[in-house]
Length: 318
Ligand code: UDP
Image (tube, rainbow, N blue to C red; front, side, top):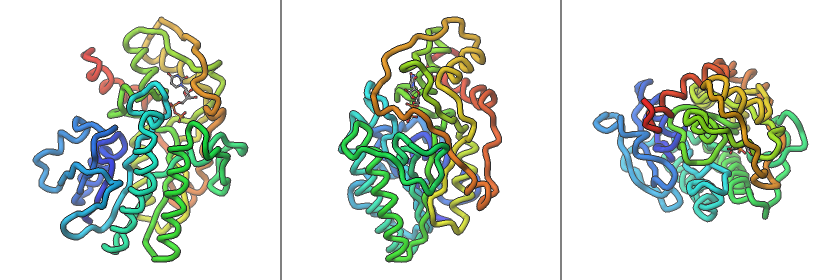
């Protein structure tokens, strides 16, 4: 297949490029580098099955030749207000990537009779009142809340995707991605794993926001990519949660990172970053298990071990 990946220079986009090229597909990557990094795709230069366009997906997209599938993964995604690449500091671009970018990709999918996949997010559930989150739970999002630029753009993107599916018969998929980590994450994006692993490797105390009792469930990137590919080649049009169902507190997560890295510097508790920090998050992956026979295989210890070499290299430690 000839597959367009938007956000190709991002964390997930670049792993998708690698996987699909490895499976013999032709890949067209697109990114404007506002949050993605050329380093993530530098190794693909010279690969004759890979073409790259530096473009903003929120403008009209033109791709010469045939396109069989479009995976729309372009968007800022970090909620950390302190991060330059987080969506707090890129609010309009975030809304445009989710709304106009999705519209452009769906228009292209329709014109090319191509499959379309939307990278959606657990953030569409907001600060959930139902736990764990099942796909049928419609969420708890404040449209003018501090996370709304991302959450509402993705909610709109899901609605638009279903509209193109129902009204124009576009062959669509929606994956709701929960916290994922691994090599090629932006060390500066302020999310939990990059912040804490970086601090641990630099032998600093780990910054736990609030009292650390809020929970998340962390999925290693290779597991997520397996699930995305399985969904792509399935017939499922309704949203599918993907993430690791093992829920833990941020405190436990930070302690695990200190243990694995042998960091003796402990923890430091800092102010919760926003009143809207979701208190609990855990995917119910029954649908993915049933439809795709998919579930994560890599546990947190293994995943962190696999991530450390990339972080050490970026930090100039090896
Ligand atoms: N967090 C933390 N210390 C950090 C970064 C994040 O305690 O240095 C917490 C954050 O408050 C949140 C959780 O870790 O409760 C996950 O944050 P992340 O930014 O990875 O993304 P989110 O899951 O909130 O979208």
